[in-house]
Image (cartoon, one colour):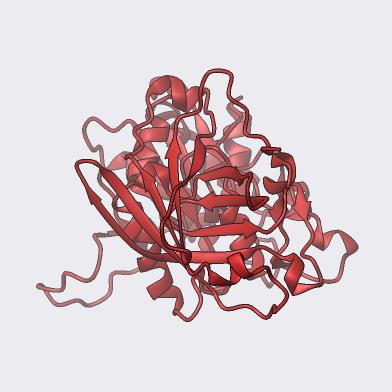
Length: 382
């Protein structure tokens, strides 16, 4: 895997400065018009033309070109694994639309939003690089680089291949709901991290992301994968977002309800009744704090040849009416083996199962994650 950060002009750097990633100078695009409006960015032309710049570098054995913004966080191992299920010799334009219904409708549901990142196969990229200048001339009135790229690819006759692991994150505030209910696919990217709350409490955005990567670096393909199990004796529903957080509902909740995204976040924009409409199923947050799930956040992680143990610590909350067994519970440990998806599992994913394991300590719950049986259902145990 190779790459660089494209810039309009090269900054002055010390020769031994290792804190800066490789830099590439994007080509001059002053000859192209940009007429979207005063709030637009002339850099949209330059960013669109990067596809021509990078192909012209003529790197050997390139299969995929992956693009993102300056605030896009990628999970490289998962990108490589996910793209491996596609044939780079064919034309592929892979990405995801926005979480916002209005944004997707305005730009296009067929467009890969640039902030979430997108991938173009080498075969398509070589052709796109030859025609992108003509597209810049025709689409001078469009807003961003991603919609220009989409328009040009559309003219070539190719369409979007949707991958739910790319995340534009067109929302503000607390993104817990989005991260705690990730689709059954590897996490590929996160965006707008400086516009949202830290994903872990009592941390800065940077520290919180570093904390998440502690888990991702141990088991990248499992990060944020949601597993749900039920405690028959205590009548609890437990939802594990591996490497991030665990939600414990002190009651039975059917799986389809657990999989809905809790609306912990706010819309990216306000002013239209549809600003708060999203491209996934929403579960409203209960007004009574005691009706909400108890959340346990990732505390630490350890691994050896036998597997991985992630430990989650209860977050503080304002509720005094919970049952004694729930009040005593302070920590949850999750036991798993490293996830290594084969090509069939990537093409036909299946959620894994989990079990509540015996624990001698009243303040500790133990959970084991495993593959489900052929006919096994993730269902409430009565």
